[in-house]
Image (tube, rainbow, N blue to C red; front, side, top):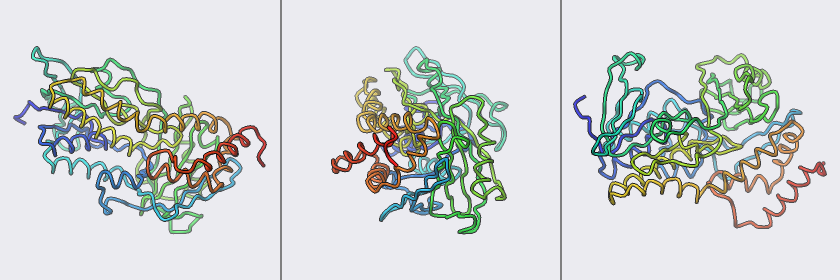
Length: 400
């Protein structure tokens, strides 16, 4: 490697970092993307139609198309929520993330492999980044060569335990849910009730005391996992229990993955000088659902736009645009979902009522509209009123 100077260096090659690097490269900005190879994030892999449209995701990148969700209560009662006239795309993060990184490189971003470790500033204001490069493909970066880069701006898209946030913004770790999943070979269609076009969500305290468990189809494979913020709760044991309840204990396990998932957006995403965060590093995972791919990619795009504006105007205050734009469009959604999780995930009695509510046509319509389009539905005021009244009756125990 001979080059060490870039306009922008993006740390982290997940969906947020890859989109940021691609967008900057397409604007003719000199950008490098540093990614720690071999890391696959545990993820159900659901992406809404808006993501597919906004980020030009080819149909070939989808491993399945979910056309319904099944919600399972603590009692075992199940409520099906069909997606009328649409679908949710399913992706395998092992391949989806790599496709995004390859597309960024094709747009002109320079791909570098290594583990980011240090950050400093030169007298001229440029940032100095240090990272370890693996000595050979497949080897640990910690034992590899030390590399140094200079950059005018840095985008930290390096996950919930962001080293960029720690070194560049002086921020600690955000409160997180810990997620764990197992990728297994899918059973035959219909075996033990498995359907390759349906996502199953388990709201059961034994599966997760404060979040949920999932079984999501990935074509030839399936993601089976759980999340929880409760210390001492065994995610692996809970996943084993979930597989038993779903009749999938005998499916061959292909790989296992775990990682922290942030619970709320950070209050500050930039240092007002040269650093801005995106994706899990910024904390943009939706409460209640744990959905993060769309919000990560949007955050990466907004970070890229902010950096491009700062480069154009030589005004680093433009970096604050990323968080401001994100919260203007999605802050209200995150607040509503946070309240939903706070009220309905607290115990099995409330989870039972929550799943029962999901059978309501108004709830299903507004839920899918909000999820598919990534915004609260304002065109149906009477539906919102009906849901509010039903929600209160369930909360107070007045509904059957």
